[in-house]
Length: 224
Image (cartoon, rainbow, N blue to C red; front, top):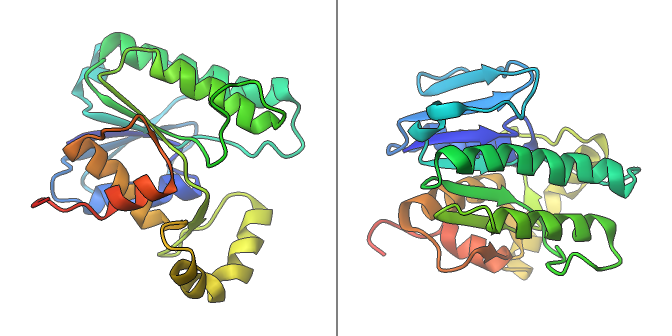
């Protein structure tokens, strides 16, 4: 598989990138961003663009999947500000990819509680729902919306958001117990990466995957 990742510098993106680089059936990983990543690996290719929505042209045909992990917190943002990143930027990129390579699997990291009606009271959930609906209508052979809630960072991975970093540091000792009590309600960064790869390997019967769906997909093995 040849994978394209947006948002590889974020917590989820770092976890997904790590799993892709370790997977034997992944031939290459291309990460697109505005700055150079510190990661180095024989499989890894970095594309630095001042305009992250820049068109790929025919070169996008090389990719089997795009893992879209790019996103921001809605805290302190107006709906217009949040929409410009969450909806406008995402759709600009996804639309160009769909125009040149509809056969790729496009996976969007959304969030638990996303409002598919796009009309609810919670701003971020409304915008995420509008984004999901637009992505599903682009015509990809496979467009999957992942809706994780709590994600435990592993292997030295940290969130770029300072408040999230503090939360994870304080919660770290309790994650084993929480994962035992709330089975399939807490995912790790590794499980997110495995689930995305398995979605490309085996497909998915659902377009919208909630926490339990992602957890099951992460555990899927070749013989299943």
